[in-house]
Image 1: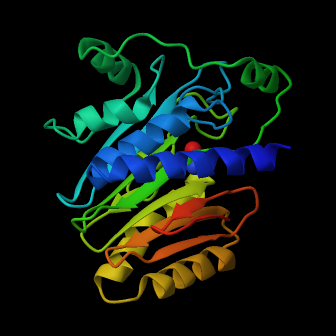
Image 2 (image 1 turned 90 degrees about the vertical axis):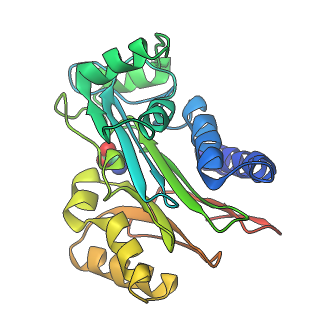
Image 3 (image 1 turned 60 degrees about the vertical axis):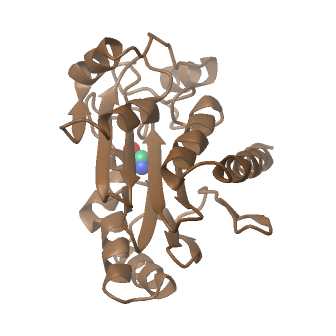
Length: 261
Ligand code: GLY
């Protein structure tokens, strides 16, 4: 059953990332976790991404280094294996976001080889005009030095207008600073309209507890009948996950145990 497969994959990735985190920063570990999620065809990111309504896969990813409070993103990139890796490359460049054909061109110029992320199942979904399960991926990590990073990657919602841009490549879908980090997924338009990730992080920065910031934000989403979920972490190691819609799954590791939600 699909839900069990998803939970098992999330648990495994959580476990591997925890081991990796022992020797790496939060930022490096977010990259590690999102790489694994993009490689798993179960999820709608990297390999296994959904198609836009012209039959092309365009992927987006956002990465945020909470320590430097620096964001980077790649928007609607094509034919790369790991969109998050290109976002990571951009993190050290002058510009913050690169989009479309030029993003693909940029990735080639900087040594990222051609890769076809299409899998059979997504092609069949596209032909039948099925939505498939949503499956944007994200990770938020706090390291031993108290630094937070967040990363989010997606193939979009499937069947969308070509060029439609995902929230994952915006600060509404992915944000972190010295106080908290958030990755969101769900209906991208609603996430952007609510400014979700940056709103939760700002609420924590201004003194609200992570729990209260998430409750307040999710209640606002419910009032507006908006459909999304968030994974959130504070610099105190508090973990909060919540959602206003089903079919969003999470796993967390707090040093002692792995939980799935
Ligand atoms: N949250 C993924 C998207 O709407 O593109």
